[in-house]
Length: 111
Image (cartoon, rainbow, N blue to C red; front, side):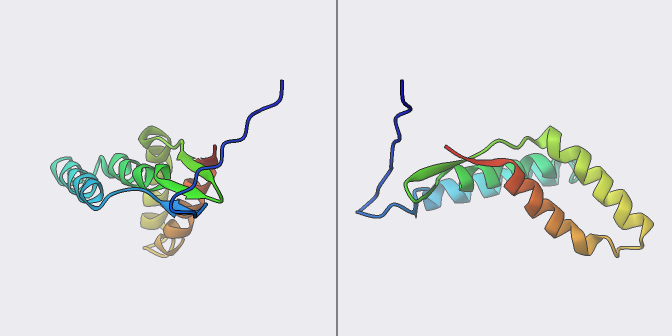
């Protein structure tokens, strides 16, 4: 049997974001407090939580995106990036943003 393709639309548009402001504020505050109370150790978890919410509420050309990354998967990279930044006296930190964006994209799929 063939696979059925579902195209989502909203107000006649096939690309949209359907997350709400209160949800965003709630997830962001939760992520902030988790990061503060764990002295930054759980920052990868907070990052995955907020980024996952954004991606999971995004539809592009009728296809919903899904974030599959996990804090455990990011944590190993985060430690490596931190150590490389320390060893290079902060120079590697300029690449951390790019590495993080690459990790996010690698863990995002189109449903």
